Image (cartoon, rainbow, N blue to C red; front, side, top):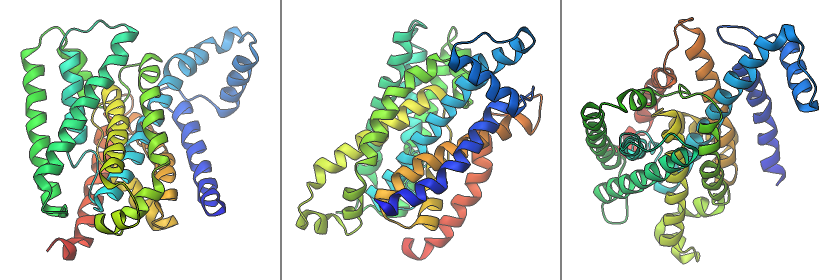
Length: 340
């Protein structure tokens, strides 16, 4: 427990700083003193002074919901990426690269273009459709990539790219043939928190909490998986049942994130690698640290997306791709000897 608490303590200050930046930085800068005063007044149930009403609208109606959604999305992608890498024993297993995010996106677009009402029930329905799409996709990719009892890196990536391309093509087709909901689906596809307000946060929260809760409890099982499936069985681990639970939990968290924040790649690849590099390969630590690290990374990426070309705003997925693609090539270079 002591070994887990120390790295968690190291991860909290960067997360707190990224939260502060996410709320304070934007087209209108909110001074930290003003921000803390507004939060204090709101928490105490007091009346916000008239001269700060414009700041209050920015903070409570725009910035905080966006920050909360980015935090949940980054946490989901970071934790899911770590779980997939541990489960498949593959450093390139990322929800984006193995097609899970694209499959979830297809499920979400099927729902969005299906004319669901924009009610709270509709917001809760989208992640379910995304979850089904993610589960089907990961099952197809895993089946295509599996050779005997192993999943070679090249097979996993190639199968993921192929299935991802197929589901992306279907998503584009649905958007092109849809008229009334095209803009809604297009806004979603660009990634980020373009869909404002607290409804997306409320919609994603229960699914991500459940998914990440299960993954955080799966650290010991993922450690056992590192010895191989046969060894895991000999150690008494119900391999098939545990694999199904971990895949379902990681797909649920990814699907909920994708359903409201769009397809944001490479967070699930970068963060688990960094956590293992700094704090070791024990998945009892890697999973919760990747949850915190993913939230921190995506919050900072979202701040960059707002300020790089201000007042124009970039999709946050573009920022993560610009940093993630070189990182992916570096990881691929490191694992090349294992591949061949």
